[in-house]
Length: 167
Ligand code: NI
Image 1 (tube, helix red, strand yellow):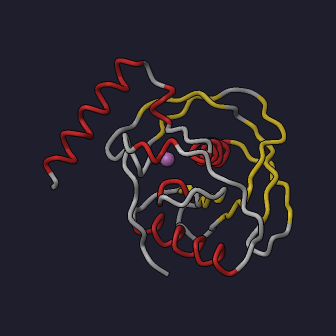
Image 2 (cartoon, rainbow, N blue to C red):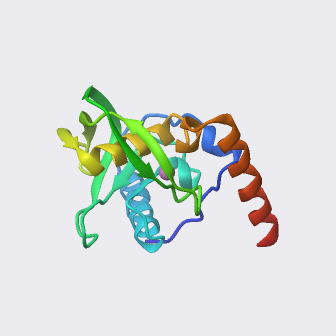
């Protein structure tokens, strides 16, 4: 397994729409292993393949207290959503930026697991927020796009400045 380099907003590649995984094979399992290692190393609680510049519909999530409950979703689909909740979000692709986003409070997601088996999961709270955040990445959407234009402009300026400083 390997820690993969992350794309940072406003990199245009973060706006790529990911393609469905046709077959869950060893190359996909290797990608999942690398994504998990990258997420834990950061550390973060979720990662979409988009963020490591692989445009396939794969996300990994671990919202457990001790980081010992990896959840993998391949070709995830939201089959239902209900309620609303506002939660402060951050993103490994938008380092140092946190802001409130309103999302569905309860969701039901259908996906494939590492063995290619279909499963359905009902989620709420932080897990529901995290899954929706990561699924947005697969659509090429970054959480800051829910914020006002003014905030987005400020965030872009700040991150571009920081990128120049770290060159
Ligand atoms: Ni993110």
